[in-house]
Amino acid sequence: MIPGPGGARTSIHPSKAIIPRGGSLRVNCSISCDQKAMFGLETELNKKVVGHGNNWKVFELSDVQEDINLLCYSNCRNEQTVASMILSVYWIPERVELAPLPLWQPVGEELNLSCLVSGGAPRDHLSVVLLRGEEELGRQPVGKGEPAEVMFTVQPRREDHGTNFSCRSELDLRSQGLELFQNTSAPRKLQTYGEALGSQQRRWDEGDFLLGMRGPWEGEAPGHGAAEKVATLIAKASGKSIFLATGVECSRLGDCTAG
Image (cartoon, rainbow, N blue to C red; front, side, top):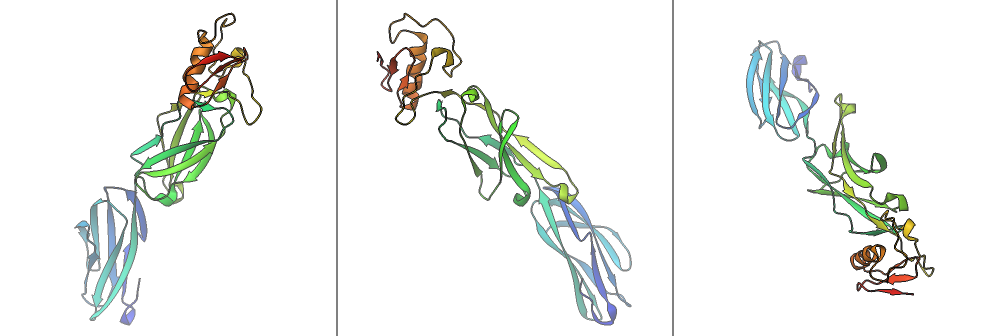
């Protein structure tokens, strides 16, 4: 609000506001002037006068799609005064997605997970949470870009086999007098396996095989047992050899041989 000569003033109410994208808002422009003056609201938005008096007007703005600066102006005694406000819009992300996981993931190796967020504003109030089941593993702000990509790094454990991972967007507008808006992606199931790490080759017992399989594989020829068949699939998918406690090695080429 900038005063003019003789104490003339222009006011705008509310002084700031945040509304859903596509929503509407009523804005009151008022003036103090000791004679009849010209005044109004300067904006590119759709507007209409829904109330007025000698020194005030109420404008209804509709279909607001983006943040905008509004300006009430008046001309009193050939001197112009103005008052401004910032009108902000918010919208919940249209889509939240966890990028596809590897077909098989080695236990103990770092895994990069990517959360993709399409839409959503204001971005400085928008974050993404990585979930393992219902457990929160991390939280990061959402930057620019469409879709915006947010990366997380995890180190899968043996017990993570078959666990669902997902991404949850959080638009937190509680500081603006609104609420916390959440949107969760469809889950993706992680499948893990054990393998040799570094120079020490660890051989997994079939009972510990991270596919959760159980059964009497003993006595079956290499390449014919259920454990070997599954290990072959994992070796092909991962490009790494899988070692079983029976002394069998299943290579990435699909062959299982006794050690």
